[in-house]
Amino acid sequence: MSSADKSKAGPTPTISRCLPDGTLIETLFDAKETTTQLAVATPDGQITVQPFLDLPTGERLVPYAPTNNLIASGCVLLPSDVGDLGDKQELVEAVRAFLHRYVDLSPLFEEIATHYVLLTWVHDAFNELGYLRFRGDYGTGKTRALLAVGSLCYKPFFASGASTVSPIFHVVDAFGGTLVLDEADLRFSDATADLTKILNNGNVKGLPVLRTMINRHRELNPTAFKVFGPKLIAMRERFADRALESRFLTEETGGRPLRADIPIHTPQDLTAEALALRNRLLAWRFAARRTVGPDPSRLVQGIEPRLNQTALALLSIIDDEAVRQRIAQALAGEEARVLQERASSLEGALLASLLDAFTMANAPHVTVSDATQRFNQRACADLGKPMTNKWVGGFLRNRLRLTTVKSGGVYVVQRTQLAKIEALAHRYGLTRDQQTAT
Image (cartoon, rainbow, N blue to C red; front, side):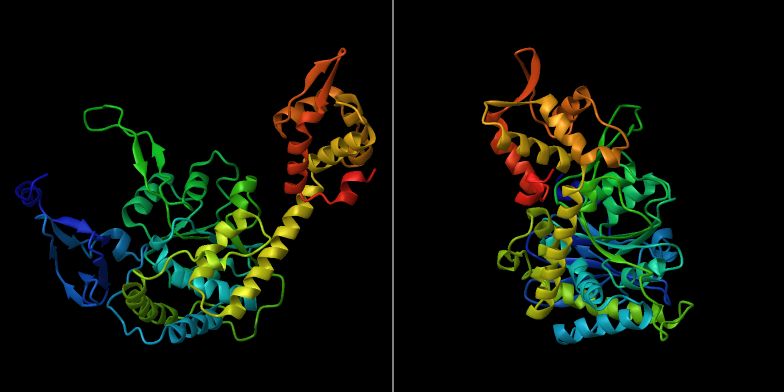
């Protein structure tokens, strides 16, 4: 489209934009004056607030109208001005003090949540992100935690698991920012639900969700919705999808008595204090967005790539090495828990049975019958009955992706797959003792 065509098309409503030359644009909303403006930060550090911005291409950017329902209702929170940045450590302490005042978090997760707030304001400098989660029964402070942490995040969009899915897709795509989702397990729990697709695809840049749309001419016109961005969720249970579970840094709520100084009702001061901090955080975005990014030196040694992928962006913006070490220890503990869970699973029991059979039999293959007998010795008590050869053969093929072939009239697992079996055993956290236990 030419410059003249863009002028004829009218102004472009804009929430935020990062121009090719590095200029950053953010919409400001003043609820008292009921006005919106654009804050513009150029690469040389100049910051201006203006009603519109004309680009060299002829396009005119204007802020969303202050009467937009998402903005006016507080469903999406924006800064009202560009605040005074001060020192980064002072900003970190101010965010931590705010969270400590209004929500009861464990000391380590208070550090994590504090720095996650900062991460949301520069998340577009990273290609992978982890999510923050509060999990516990009702009345354990999950919703308060979402409100307190979410109110400081970059363009937070507050929604519920009971919400209609379509507007969530549209808002996340158009506004970007941070999705804050309460009661996330009431409407979906498996890998096929629409909201789960946002969570499954939204942690890696460049993986939009395709949804069927019909244009005004009634033609099929699938639309790609951008869902990448930070996310905070509250829920009572775990997700059934293990891959989705691995994307979260989780605080278990309700495990200790509530601190006496935590207000039971949400104070009016929270809203004003959160707005003042969002203004300062916007200044931090303008100052830091061009200089931050993933720092491979912050990778945690000895843990799985997925956990490192989940945590690296957060670790990359934390300056305090002691805090990084505490998070690294927590990640190592989480990996140990996951490996123990995997080792006690049916997959773990069957892999241990196969390795035991290969160790005991110096033969080119192990029969499925032998594997079944050893598996039943390990798992029959948990399953309540012995499994058949047919069931074990199907489990090997469908769950572990191992090949069974017929040899001498019986199905076998060939020794040529031993390296794959050992790699799977390592992934499932099986120690040598667990592999040979009967």
